[in-house]
Length: 395
Image (cartoon, rainbow, N blue to C red):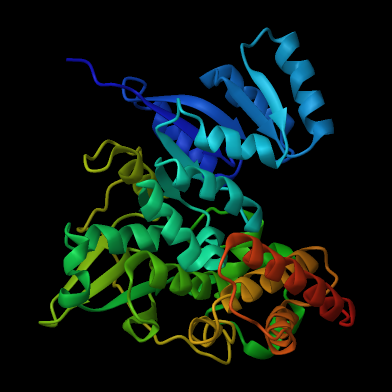
C-alpha cells in the first residue's frame, strides 16, 4: 500500500532551515510533496525552488518582490500562483490541503502564520524560536486547542524531545532537569577586551554550524541560547530552575535530559540541521537525512564548560524574563532583533548588543499580556524603545 504523501508548506524556504528542509524532502519524493513556499526577498532562489518542487503557491514579503517573481514564473511557464504579505502567509500555513508546516521565518514576523498553523491542527515543525519566546503560553494554548502536533526543529530542543519519554504526561514526575548544550560560538576563547572590535563577518563565522546572519550573531553573544532556554520552558513545561546550559564546543551532544534517578539520556550526532528536520518530517518514524554519521573511532575528546556570564552577559537574561511578568520574553526578543540588526548595519558595536537588550528591559514596565494582540503591541513598543537606545550609541 502506497504511503499518503505529506503536503508541506515551508515558511522561509530560502533561508538555511528552508533550504535544508527542501533537501530532505527531495530525498523522499514518495513521502513528501511541497504545497507552498515563502521567502522575503530572494527571487532567483525562490524561482529555482518553484521550478524544482512546483508548489501551488509562492509567497513573497512585498508586492514588488512578488511582481518580479510572478513575471519570472510566467516566463518559465510554471504552475505556481504568486502571493504576498502577511495574510498570504497565514493562508498557506492553515490551508486545508496542508498536513505539515515548517516554520522557519526568522523573527516575530513568523508568529502569525505559526498561530494559524496551530489553530488548524497542523503538524508544526517549529524552527522559529519567536513563536514561543513571544507567544509563550498563549501560543501553547493555541496548539492544544487546535490539536496541532508541535515538533521542535532547533537541534537542542529536538535532542531533548528525542531523549524524553514518549508519554509527555510523565515528564514532570520523571525529569529532574534538561541540559541545553551550546558551542560557545566564535568568541568562546577570545579576549573579552577585544570584543569591542568584533566585525559582523567575524560574528557570523560560526565554527560548527552554517546559519543565517541573525542567528549567527545570536550564537556569538549566546542570546540564541537565552532564547532557547525560554523556548524550552514552554515546550517541555518545566520551571526555569530545571533548565541548565553547558558549553560543549564540539557540538556532538546536542542536549541532555537528567532523570530523577540521576541517569542522563542524550542525543548525539554530527552538526547538521537535516537530522532534526528529517526527524520532524517523518516522526514517529525515521528516514535518511543526508547527514554524515558519527564515526566514534575518530571522534576527538568531548569537553564541557560552564558559561562565562562576563563574556556572555545576555544568557542570564533568559531566567530574568522567565521569572518576570508574562510579556517580558517578548520585550527581550524584540530588543535583541533591533540590536542585532543595528550591529549588522554597523550602527552599534558587538559589545553594545547586550546594553540595548538590558536597557530596553529596564525601560519598559511590562504588564500581563493575555493574547497575541497584546503581545504584539508589547513587541512594537519594545522595538521603538530599542531603536531609540541603539540610536544613542555609537559604533
